[in-house]
View 1 (cartoon, rainbow, N blue to C red):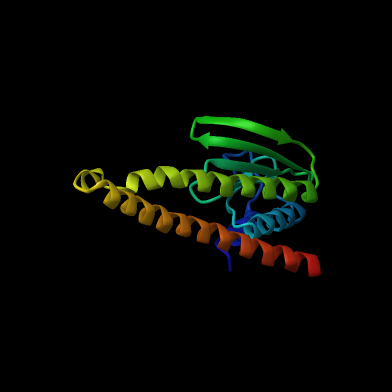
View 2 (view 1 turned 90 degrees about the vertical axis):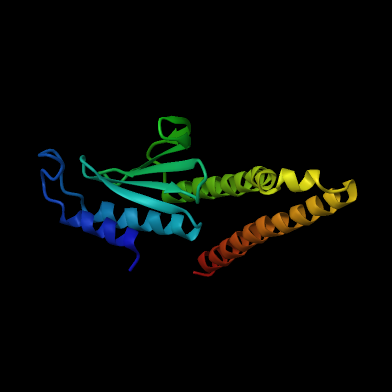
Amino acid sequence: MDSTLSAIDAFANLKDGWDFGEGIVISNEVISKAKDIYLIGRNYQLEAEPHPTPDGGVCLVFYYRNNDFFLDININSDNTVDFKEEKGFGVNYETLRSAQNITVQELEKTIVEIRTKCNISDFFQFGSILSKSIDSKAIHSKTTREVSQLLTTNVQYKTLNVLASMLQDTIVQGQQDFQLFIQ
């Protein structure tokens, strides 16, 4: 079984007072909705960290690879859903948007938007990776034509890798969307 699903299931074992005397029991409805939302994010290749909240809810923090976009989703004890989209790391982050009491369908649209932002960000990070991968000493010892060939080969190789990764993500996403459509 998926370790994140197992962690969410384990929240059902928490007893009143689990958080230094303050935490309350998390209902089966909240746990079920948290698992449903996690599965939606997983379908879009987002990773998640689940956390119980002392007020009887579950928080899911979604992220994609090493990207700096995060989505904090709170399934509250009354089974409503709130979210906050953030960009950055650690204490250096900004809240891009947030909403309270949204539907699962609205949340899925938000997840798709964030996943798209992550793909775009991956593509632009490619330029930084490429510039670090070229040995400047090797370039100085080459003629202009050799440098041009080296750069062209390097760019073609890196571009193909980035595009292949993006295409693979798109194909997987298309297959998942199709599966959701036919259900």
